[in-house]
Length: 483
Picture 1 (cartoon, rainbow, N blue to C red):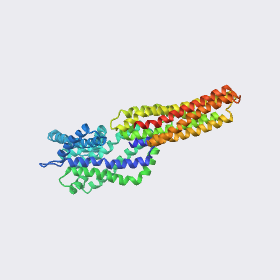
Picture 2 (tube, one colour):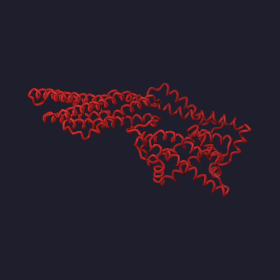
Picture 3 (cartoon, rainbow, N blue to C red):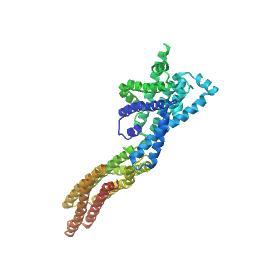
Picture 4 (tube, rainbow, N blue to C red):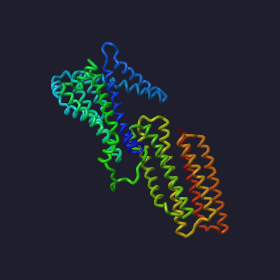
């Protein structure tokens, strides 16, 4: 998620770094829950309780009608299945630990660097430090490894967890790569600090394992879970004041590069990494659509300036933004297709996404009509003709009406406000009436010889295109009726 936000320009590298710090502490909660589930005995254990939650959650997920109840069912089922899996894993570990060959191999691995390396490799393969730590907890509880071995495996899992960020960053922009590097450097720094601390403690015949055994005697699962939390919290406390330096370092290590293959345009608010969190991605799609609409309106303004003043100073900007609209149209629709296929979307989100295809197309068509107006302006300039003063005044009023409609339509769409939609409908009807008046007035001017037939044809086409722009603007606002 963080890489997606950075790549889309929503948050800065410094903000991303602090989010990563918090995520590293937050992920230790899983180990605490797993350790809690390892308490049992003859009484009813937490594993049994949470297994019952899994059944209840599955029942709610299948039979509940409300989206909120289904979500609650998913949460209960998820927690429950976590402990069901833990029971299976612990049972397997007990049988595995009974094998003499396994005992000899694992008991023989005491080198801290080797254990950290193993933890890193295993976590990189399964792509989850929480799962790796849970496995280490089960191994410690069954006596397969000692607490110190479990600690080094857990430290290695923190480095291995960076593989997810690295994979996501490699396929994204420069800042996304920097974010992945921040994650890697942060976790490697924490491991290095604690490895050096362990070396110093070793001179006094003290280890992290022995320290946590004294604080939490006879509960190895709690010892390892607490170390995991302690490790990440201390690392954050040490690295937080150095965030600025860390950001500067990764910026120098990965400088901004614009190669021949760098795309001219990109989506600003959405990124494929956001597909991991569909509800967040939906809200970002709306932001991208609003951005696209603003670009289209800017081109409408430029086209009307060119038509009335025959000033083509901004034609290059117009053409660039027209290409950008076409790019967003293609890429955003492709993203919405991928997003629509993801699970975890509510009914309202799916209803919204189903309407985005037409919304995107409506905005792209507004840009196309603006392009038509530029062609009319170019034809006028080439012929050495221009619109009359009265015609330019009418176009100026039409521009004001289009802006009024745009503001109301986009506000209604963004806020899902039906009252604002009704106001937009009134302005859209006013534009319909005014474009008819424009056509009638211009015909009279041609009859009086004020305008030539060729200029009149361009004017009538302009008013017709403006009326169609208004239709597409109101279509965007009307899409909220299906939500």
